[in-house]
Length: 261
Image (tube, rainbow, N blue to C red):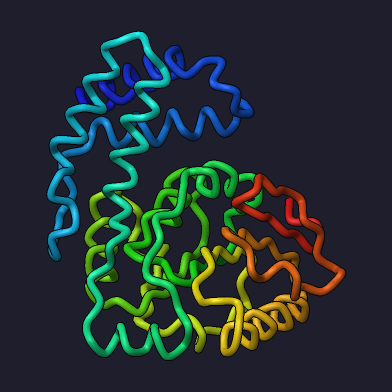
């Protein structure tokens, strides 16, 4: 009971500190929830040594909750989140060679915007997919905010997948809700998924062009409504006319085909 009281107290405090931050109210409420959850958790399990500064950064974030500066709270949380995202992925030699061969990018730390917006398009029966998931933090957090049937995390770094499985247990996301696939994203099909997230997993030329065109064609053939969140977007120009861009902030492009909710 004591942790629950602490969680509720954090929620109330954060709601006050972030009031008027300019976000739509549903997104602000989701940010408050993520902050409150992480404020109350111990340091995450770290099987491959990705989070050496987590305890330090977590303490700095929690300290801001006692103040009156909402911007300081958000800045401290973003720093903690970026560290937890672990953007410097530990690739083996073979994994690096495969990324180079397919024109891929090294792991990028995606921002909070996709996490805070995604629940608007997530249903309980949604099957979501992250192409180039790293440690899977972003869709794990989406599962926290909007629990749904299945998330598939595709990543070529086996070490990052190991870290992601540990994060899943730490966050309390049910085991049956997430499938981890050690695979090259260019070999992955998007058929059967309702929500697809990607952060420019490969370069938009050569093999990459063929990859994006194939994904667009598969998405266009889906018999169900589909939503795509594409960061640093290279996919949108290849999507069929049946898709509408419903959001763009200069970094995140959101596309929708059919009535999702």
